Image 1: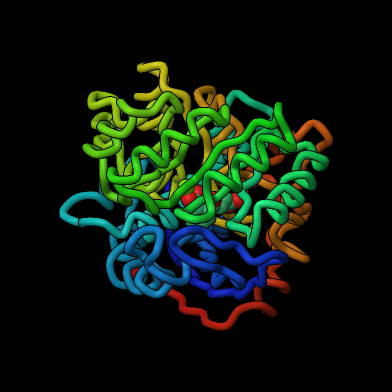
Image 2: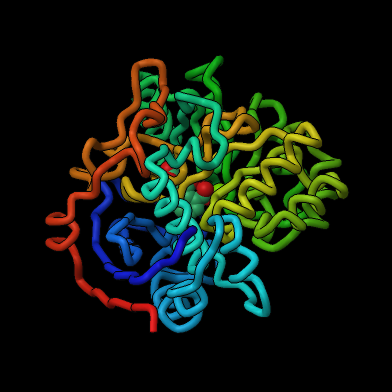
Length: 374
Ligand code: OSB
Ligand code: MG
């Protein structure tokens, strides 16, 4: 039985080691919301809200999520008895539209709390079967094809198993072609974060010759129909990210042929219960899934790693190790990747599998608020 007694919200600031530019915006420093959840027996855990600084990925931001959590999400969970964390998602969905990242932060926290309470790994609690996750890197838009080729070269040396190139009109065909020429066998894909429309179909078809594993979210953030039209024109599989906000959207994608792969980010879909439902549906239909990232701290990464240990996650995830993002993470041990490009799932440790450095979180905190059961 889960009964959350108290939630502490912390906003921390973490500068990225390298600026991250995508077609819809630039990030140099993450404003990260961490949540500390505890029950009345002293069981405690941490979770992370993955909303960004600006509404350029979904409509949520850290500030809208902070408000949604304190005003609407937390009151539906605090002091309420749940027999299992899978009961939290339906309680948050009833007459409550949107705010998926705010909901996910708390929904996933209840899974973390349950894992702590039962002294099992988060992966095991979810039904994970993998002990290692093949890992990919997401490389931001660079100033020139040569700069991108250089950056990709470093990623290959670091043994990444999938290399995702961010693209936009003007930073696309020539950039990807230069990388393909330099590395004929590299496992490459592209992510456009909504930068194109159907009128760019001929341009996007040029990517078909570059042997990409997939093209992620070329069209609008909430589109399914046009992606189906584009997929009919392209040989390269389309992977949807932004458009898949719940299991019904995944079903729409599959039945309309709007894509052949799904990037599951638990924050985007409202948490682990929706993530598992999408995973299960995709397994049933033979659609591969992989776990995306939102430049998380080591806390959010723990949840992503646990999710990616489910059997249907058959494509490398955007789960780079801590030192790809931060000079120093907020967890110990930090997340690392071995020289085969594998991040290990901490199956032998209960809960998240990493310890949160409370002193460091306090040092980095610029805003905090505590909400309690009435
Ligand atoms: O589209 O996958 C994306 C980061 C922020 C917003 C959107 C995206 C991303 C990434 C980062 O690609 C992947 C990572 O966390 O390493
Ligand atoms: Mg994406």
